[in-house]
Length: 265
Ligand code: OOG
Ligand code: NI
Image (cartoon, rainbow, N blue to C red; front, side, top):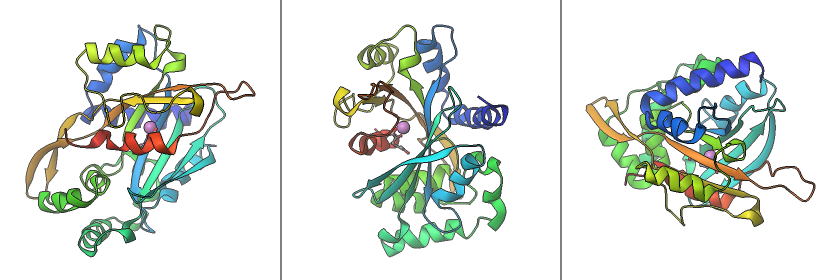
C-alpha cells in the first residue's frame, strides 16, 4: 500500500479508536499477533451540495481509488458507492449519503442548520474525512432526527470519521469461517448485530458479513454531554466468483442490516 494511503487510514484509525475502544480488543482477539487487514472502511454523509458523497470520494479518487458499485436503500433514503484501489491490502471504501430532501421539513431544517455552519473549503483537504462533527448540534435536535432517521441522527452527532473498519476474514490465519469469528467475539463479550440473523449474506451472494453493535461514547451536544452509540466493527468473508477472483462488491440486502449497527440497543 502506498505511503499516502497508509497515512490517511492511520489518521482515520486513530480518530476511530478514540470513540470505538473495543476495536483494539477485536484486533487482539482475531489477529493472533499478526496485523489485521481491513476489507473496507465506511463513511456517511448528507447529500447536500457542500457535503455530498462526491466531496468525500474526491480524496480517495486523488489517491488512485476507482469508483465501482452503486447501491440504493429505498426505505432508509440512502444512496451509496464503493471504491477500490489496486494496491494489495488497500481497504475498499464504502460511502453512503442520506437523501435529505426525502425527510420531513422539520428534519431538513435541522440538517440545513448544521450544514450552514460548515465553512465552504472544509471539504477540500483529506483531513476533512476525520474532522468529526463540524457543527454544533443540540441533544433536542439529535432526538428529533433520531425519531425519523437513525442515520440522520448519527451523522449529526458524529460527523466525518470512519463509521466502521471491517476485518478481512479471508486474511485471518486462525479463523476460516464467519461462524468461528462470531463465536470468538461472543465468547469475549461482544454484542453482535442480529438484525436479520448474525450472518448477513451467504456463499450464493459471495459475501458473508457480521458486525458488532456500536460502542457508546460521550458527545458534547450544545445543551450538554450525552452518551450515545458511536462506531462499530464489521467482519467480511468473500467467496470466489466463477472466474476464481474473490467477489469485490457489496450486497444491498446485507448492507441494509449492517446500517443498523449504530442503533441503540
Ligand atoms: C454502512 C453499512 C453497509 C456494508 O459493508 O455493507 C456496509 C454504514 O453503516 O454506514 O458497511
Ligand atoms: Ni461495511
